[in-house]
Length: 396
Image (cartoon, rainbow, N blue to C red; front, side):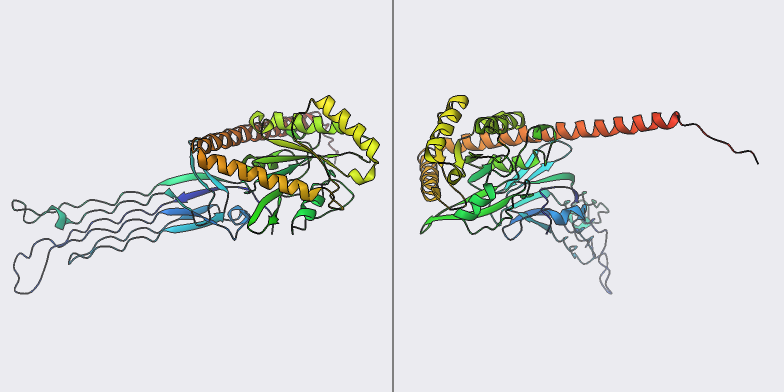
């Protein structure tokens, strides 16, 4: 199944049914009075999180969704049937945005969480509602109101506590295979990871966390090079970023230079994301001896002025991964405990994630505009070249 993390759709709630104008008519019953019933309410459009889904691919093929209209009222005080709600299933981690206003309607982070995105129209009133002691035969009714209509943008950001980032072939996929049951593609060429992969890391009984493996970044990713930066938005939900660095790259690139490339791309994408908790993971330590590794580590930390956590692992042999996973689990538990003790930290975390997501949307939108302008400029240039072509006419 194709991984799709963005989709644009239009939703239309059902209209409310009209009220009925009717009078009771029975044999031997003179002037039976009004008996027009109310209409039915229109159906609403509801989006619900489903943990069995992992892509928005279904919304790429069907763009318009309409709930059922409410039925009109009938005589004998019969109320019209209400329209059925339309429930759309999306993966957990989907953010719902109103395209016209830019308002975030909901962030579905829990399985089964519903969000009404278009409210159905209210029913109209039949003439029975207007009868009174002074108005015995009312001919007033009201029409049902129109249902809401919205143009929505759905954004999927995978739910994981830990995110992996680094250059292609830094060993991200190998690491997630070593610490979890996930089996992403691994090969000796770059860009083997084309979509985010999730893995559950079980540290002990009832102690586990989810790690996300993202496609690698290259210099210029913030300008659209390689696979670009659109997958970085999946890191905005992570509490810890693991920055993998190949200590023995096959092309001879200095590890400090590789690390600086990733840091620059993060800062271009989202300054808030770049300031997130990030741990350096020196990978492929089995390819060099201990003295050379110590030299690489010292040079790397000095050039980056790094003061955060640093770990040395060999993902292919799982050396050092157990201690890394235990420390991650402990750190996540400390964060959760701190939020339980101080609820204000939860609000701060939500605000930080929203700020990262806003910066990500702005950056991705700017990149798309630049690509659109470049495409239009190329089309205009091609048209100008066509104007210089010489038309050859052959005499009969």
